[in-house]
Length: 342
Image: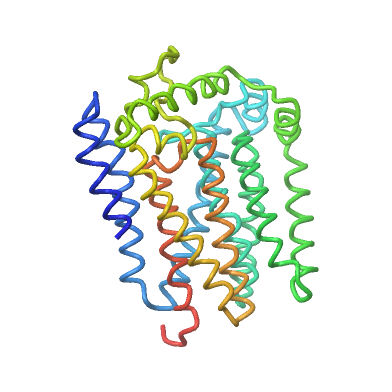
């Protein structure tokens, strides 16, 4: 019901108030696709083998994305030369549909789930596969140089540790974290991120965001009920945006308020709130210890994705919308893993 209210509010109202009507369709369709994916998974995936296949598919997606990053580095003149290029230009990594910060958002979602599935599965081959994938993805996420993404991932892993630091899982989890930390420290770009976070060294893009936050808030105050429409914030900006700069607020709270107003924002945040609340409730009711860890990993993933959206325009991205709401759909059907029927 909340999804229907959100979609039916944002499209017609947006078309009425927006300066650029086509942007409404361009961004609205991404939210619609997310809802469609969630509904498809929630209502059609009802077998244990299907849930497992989707989880493994998510891990394969993260691994594939990491391999694509490595290929980009090789195409830049070799792996070593690519690393040097990332160090000098700070944000060189990009593919046809996304740049570094956007690519990091997928690792924020997938790495916690991969850890959860590593503890859940009893298959030795799958344990080897998930462990190998974790190593590759941990190295790849550092290549993005996304401070927001890495901080969100760190918080998600801290949340995940609250459940995994138990008697039976303490030693395996600490060993896994030690290996992942070792992989991260061996990445020559790690200290670049640490330096950037510690002294707030940054490019002009962050200052652009700060100024655009003020313009977004002003747009919300001028149109508090309806907002200005998806993708139309730039037309209300008093701060001159550089050519090619995104019109996004780079903050899901400000962005929703500015683009769809108080009404649309309330619908959207009620959706997220209900998802997290239901997942936490199902976690508390779960009796199976292995499945309990897996449920908690999904909750950590979703919280990490939401935190990352406070500094990056992730939810409005087409690919992110598919993966995020796919994860939400899977998390809502994890009870199917209790079934012995395939």
